[in-house]
Length: 151
Image 1 (cartoon, one colour):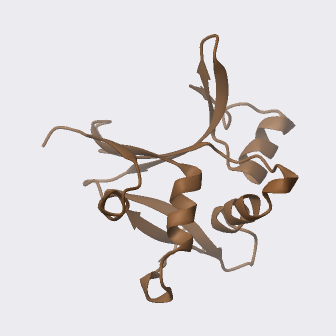
Image 2 (cartoon, rainbow, N blue to C red; image 1 turned 60 degrees about the vertical axis):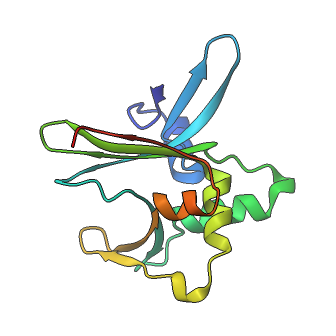
């Protein structure tokens, strides 16, 4: 895996800001694909994918950009093939990590009833995010690879 965000060039910034690609996964002699990666430092694993839903200033969020890319597939907008969410303790101990195909995640979200939506506002950056429980995806037969850390 090669991080995009650690590079200081304009292309890396555009990949992150426009396509939501935080890293490249390079499979030797096979191919390359984009990854969306979110790491949360906390005392417990919430076992959710957190999808930024709205910003108070009206700037497009990752949710709006991914839905736009999926709905307008004829234009070929780039977006991450996989979405990864990890929870780590302050001691850098892995609590849990999960990976899902980005397309599957956003299609699942799009099929949820209006009552399902319950975005949580993050006071630190004036944006809201929608938690998507890993178990809800699994229940609905969405393939999610999960690795849980020590109990």
